[in-house]
Length: 195
Figure 1 (cartoon, rainbow, N blue to C red):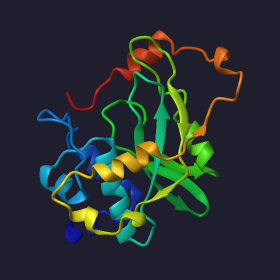
Figure 2 (figure 1 turned 30 degrees about the vertical axis):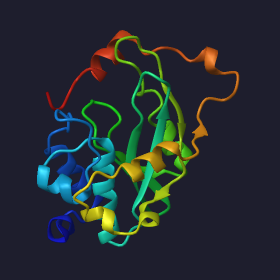
Figure 3 (figure 1 turned 60 degrees about the horizontal axis):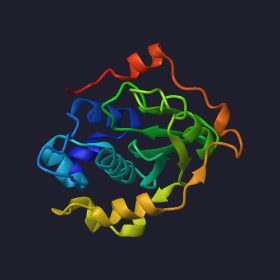
């Protein structure tokens, strides 16, 4: 596993790898594969991609950090791997949509980075914006190292990420001023990378 991940020595290369493998549609039931299993299966969904990206970043001297994006009921939370260069945050993301993707390291704070996903995070049938919160960076070192090569699904890590405290995005009282996405935005968001 290390040999493959060592080649992925920049966020751009890691993102390129994640873009090159199919989206994990979990056809045989829900999964939360380890980085080792992702490399073997050559497919991933968001949390699987985030954990693989965080592992690759750790191999190259960065902390294995992820951030959770929390949404309203009826939509799916998203998890991205984080990286920081010269004091600015960026994100690596595995998604099947035309949005919720990679972020260049231009954001001064985690909040700024999380807010960059707000306008793109909506239900593609109604346009309702669903992003309500984000987590502070989660250092995956808290789970040790064995998870990276585990043959088992990593539900304990997924639960911790899901249950962690999330910081609200929408200022109190401003919920009623949030505009739905328009037809053009909804059409663009319906573009899928992997059918």
